[in-house]
Image (cartoon, rainbow, N blue to C red):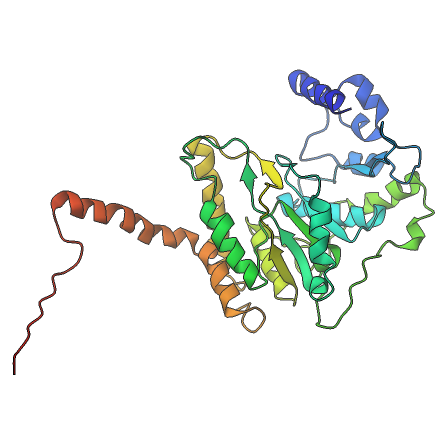
Length: 365
């Protein structure tokens, strides 16, 4: 099955279009044609916003070993030129709403399209955090480190991020304030729905609504179309108090901070075996563009009302506020780093002492 899927993807990339046979098999694909643009395709949502490719409730949907397939859903949210689509945050919020209609599962995995799972036991391990008898109820999300499978031998662009993965994120996790990095993160659905956490509250894991258990696939698809439309969020708190927050290039960081300021905690988990692997920038140009976007977005957060020292005052610990500042002040921190790299080298080359001479005079009484 994997080899067949791989062949279909490679064929689509080579030809630049989806084969006619595949288009006929899935109604969601049949709506894509040469007259539809990525930024303007309202008819896809209205006619076939969501296509359930595999219905996990169907007992006949099993693999060669007899194990049931999970439910697989294809979603193309509506996009119109006169409506802001809010990039990744808008896509995530649409997925949150549609998934609540299809399954309403209590936990959500956020994983970028260029990353893949490298550990089959991840789900079991992550449930230990959420289902812990003492502190499991207060965990909003568990963040994994970002690891890559295409790092160069010398890692000249610093993609390994050893200090970040081993020291900084682990330290923030010690304060219950591990940063949400936008990928490789398991979320509790309630925390993404704008709910506040109060100590003593018991979070119910069985959140599947009974009204959907008897719905057919067609009914679920129809009811999900509205949730994926671009006008659904008008007049709501989506992008403000619910879901991922809008208006910031690093929506993941500010969303994680807002969740923690509502009383939730977060954890950081860095197992010996890399849980998720992805693709790192392989050229200087791509790396600079990525770091520029991160720097601008994090500086924007620090200078906004979401500055951790003001917005997080009394809500998260001082250590957590300082942990956020390591990243939010990433851009200005480059100045002392450059000084540390350049000035000592020049002083050594010129024979100039790095430190002023100290004269000590001793008077004998």
